[in-house]
Image (cartoon, rainbow, N blue to C red; front, side, top):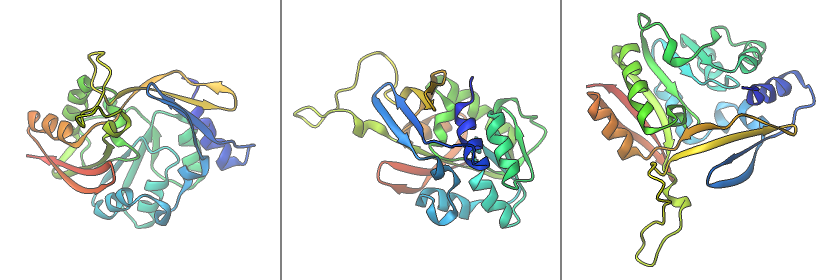
Length: 235
């Protein structure tokens, strides 16, 4: 991994000739992601993210924290928050921004003896699952890390709207055998291309069914167009 995403965050934080990121997926063309969007304040965040932060309580884990904007807000509210990301450069930027408890860490490798009251997966938080198979691995890990009355707050987007409709109102989805939300995702920055990764856009019903299978309760907290915020708790 070249860590281009983290490099863009660090460049912006240190004013090192930052440029915008560009992203593309297996079903969409190159699209700009303004780098300053990752440094947004609470008032600039989507309503789903604001709602998630409003519901956050207790000892909190922010997974895939990126530039650390969610954790910085919570830290300012005196929430006991730990932030993790697999990007060393993003974590460096978070520390420069004043985030106190932030580490380079893979969620699946966390010590299961540490428990959290709230676990956040935000900015299409389902993306980290990568594909339908790995959802099971992540949900098992979530069960290990939640306190008895803990919660996961996760946002996702149903991308069925991106596929063409036929005359009967059905959707034309490529018959490659994969779930339609399993996409290849590529980041571009300053003329370089990152290694392509899998990224999952998950509809709520599929998330809920997976949670049910793992004896987890999943409820929809809020919707915004094709996106949703869900709360997952121990059943």
